Amino acid sequence: MATVLLLRHGRTTANADGTLAGRRAVHLDEVGRAQAAAVGARLRAAPPAAVVSSPLRRCRQTLRLALPRAGVTVDDRLTECGYGEWEGQPLRRLAEDPLWSRVQQHPSAVTFPAGEAMAAMAARAVAAVREWDDRITAQHGPHAVWLACSHGDVIKAIVADALGLHLDQFQRIGVDPGSLTAVRYTDLRPFVLRLNDVGGDLAGLTRTGHAAGTATSDAAVGGGAGR
Image (tube, rainbow, N blue to C red):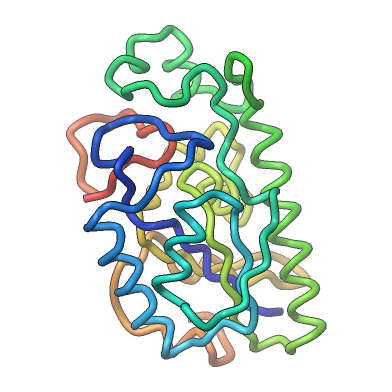
């Protein structure tokens, strides 16, 4: 089967401000633009056979900087979780909301006020990646590498599925802005080849075979600003 590179968009102004952007049209800050350019340089060693993206501005901006000549297909199933009334609020304030502890400990039971259930977000994102992987494998062969650009919690949910973890354990996974996570699906099981990778050579992913420090135990809703 093909290998998918899950790219989290570069750091945004909301990440830098400690605000939960959700589906708002925030843009990359200076650090995020540099992260996108660095990802583009790394991807020259493993040019993606296809590029699929969340529809949100920060993902599209990341891809324009990283892969300016690539054709990008938008899939709404890769969009950010619908945080509803939490969108646009400071994470520091949200951490005082009683719902915060459930997001940390039992996210599979969480539906955000006027927003989306985290379980529904995970289901749509996993279905999208698995469907695209089947399609790209059929079109380009089992050694193809393709790219999906999305968001912190979305990528964490995809990784949890690949690791066989319940969604309630996905807060143990870190996905920084501008990072790449590589997953190869097979008939028997997925293999997580890279996780939260912010540097290094990607050339090995085109070959066969398998090859953050924080002061709090709470996971940043939305993925946080990275290190």
